[in-house]
Image 1 (cartoon, rainbow, N blue to C red):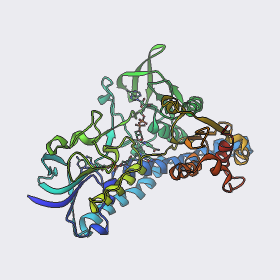
Image 2: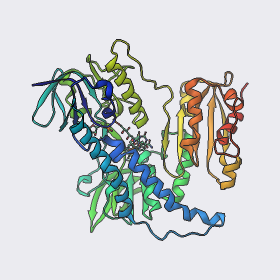
Image 3: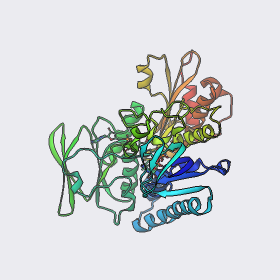
Image 4: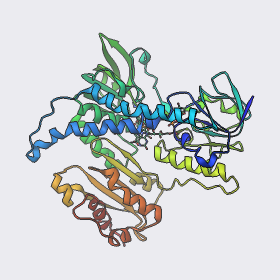
Length: 457
Ligand SMILES: Cc1cc2nc3c(=O)[nH]c(=O)nc-3n(C[C@H](O)[C@H](O)[C@H](O)COP(=O)(O)OP(=O)(O)OC[C@H]3O[C@@H](n4cnc5c(N)ncnc54)[C@H](O)[C@@H]3O)c2cc1C
Ligand SMILES: NC(=O)c1ccc[n+]([C@@H]2O[C@H](COP(=O)([O-])OP(=O)(O)OC[C@H]3O[C@@H](n4cnc5c(N)ncnc54)[C@H](O)[C@@H]3O)[C@@H](O)[C@H]2O)c1
């Protein structure tokens, strides 16, 4: 049985660990799918390439009210798709080849890994290996809900929907979270009629409620948004998917050519037989790790979607850097910093968030004040004639410590970054607002004004 210094399971964020400092280590990489993981192949990167294209496709429609009459002649779907994956696929293949052929100390196994004993791994290629150390970076996969006959209709998930052969006339999206919001924007901008079916009362319900309400209202004006619905059965009749729902008004059916399932992602821990090596797993499937990303077994680390409460690439990258350090310096381990994890939804409008929502501040019994600012009342937002965007900041009324920030509107993921910086480095709201120049008339003035509007003592 071959023995390695280190085995890394998953080539998403795990693939970044083995840099030149590991040149003297004998390393195995095990990957069951496409090299490079979710973000590169089916996640952040292609979705944002589609989102940018959708923003361009949507621009003519928004020009008329500013006096610019433009017309969208069409979207060449297969050209868009092939341009995007024509750029992505070679990166994935190049990364695989580099590891497999040019890294003398790395062996790549193309198989589904599974533990068969303590620090003993079946690589799924016919070879079982052992190692002193393991990194479990096997990510997550889309959940498919229990809806009768859903398996028979040829539904899509985010793994497959970006490679459709043709654009459907209509698309039903089951789920009301990140993926639903982003793909609704993409496909509707390309001319697809979108219906979103959600279980709860709001889209993006984990966002600050005011933001989720605003987004749900805007979404309902563009898309057919059906909330408080339970999908009970699916069927495909003459090429049309019929999704049977139960809702406040009883039974109803939504018809479309394609169904996209986007109801969350589950950690891939169940594929790994982790009990065989003694690694503890939570009831929700996440691998248990401490602040140093160490699992319950000495020398075995986990990172990213398989262990984190945040299924976000910047978190997985951060944790990979922590694991990298701790592998090299096990006696001086560093801890992951999960204090202020931001996130963004690249829909239309865009949303960004960091820290506590108002609901979380209430739940925790914290004293807080809110400063809000509409985009319409800062110069650039006014110039754009934006009518729906706003930023809100939550702070401690006495110390001015920033507790959270939520932005919905143009460039939200960029506009929020100074608040992430302030929170990370302990800058209070007053100092942040007054202690620096804010370029006039730039979009971050929406943050400056939200800070100035905080009723601090
Ligand atoms: C559509 C979509 C859009 C997204 N957009 C964003 C975004 O804009 N911003 C953001 O921050 N995050 C985004 N995310 C989330 C982000 O992609 C993930 O949080 C991140 O990629 C997780 O990285 P990871 O390394 O933990 O897992 P992954 O990148 O998923 O890597 C895990 C790898 O392990 C492999 N694997 C699994 N099981 C086994 C096994 N048993 N044996 C061998 N190999 C195995 C998998 O094939 C996979 O390649 C998006 C996700 C999706 C689905
Ligand atoms: N921009 C980004 O950072 C980005 C983009 C896409 C995905 N992601 C990551 O990927 C994860 C998965 O995305 P997602 O949108 O699938 O999950 P999500 O957790 O964001 O949203 C899932 C939604 O589906 C709803 N739902 C669950 N079961 C349902 C059912 N049976 N019927 C109808 N609705 C149901 C939930 O209430 C929730 O609103 C996200 O949580 C996020 O961490 C991030």
